[in-house]
Length: 252
Image (cartoon, rainbow, N blue to C red; front, side, top):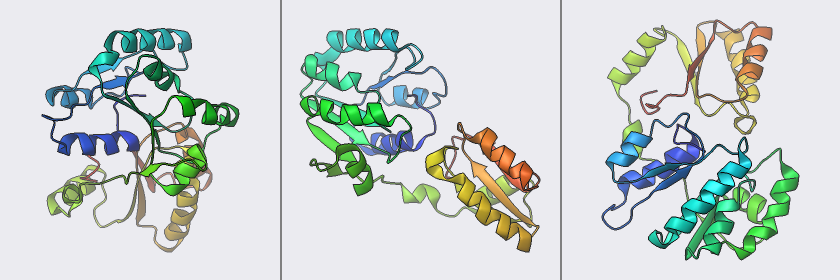
């Protein structure tokens, strides 16, 4: 969708920053002008970013633009790699097949969607178009591909970035007034898949035992209002901190 701070984006950037870009180069075809803080870094590393009209808000304009882009540029590419939370947006795979991009990858990053009818309808439709199936877990593969052959690709993380740093600890604690507090931290989009309600139920029990406890929620998403309402109902507003989406997750 965009080049923001989501999990699929982080996974892709971990690869892109570490591959030999003199041998393999990535370009990015996205469908939103919002939340694209990774764009300057990508362009500095030699990648190009192409922004199409938003989907599904401008569905036909998006399809028309993607069709033109792939018709004009397909010969430049040896592969197209579609990262999917569900089989809702499969037009790029169909067009890549139409315009003869030789390697066409669909990559499952999820195990759930509210748009089940369309997702299930597309499960068999994509068989003609894809050459490779990737998944971040066996469950994600079974959900999207059922019994079809796939390649498990772990969501690799650069552990050195997340090693302990006392300066980072002190800076973050000072920023959010967390000195001498017992901090529970969580990083993730505020969406149903991340199950924040369960996290909040656990934190409510912690808070009963220690009123110096604080919950630091790093991320943003469509469930924010629902989560805020739950927090207010449980009278935990002073104990829960929303950071919003951040670009320096490792420091947190």
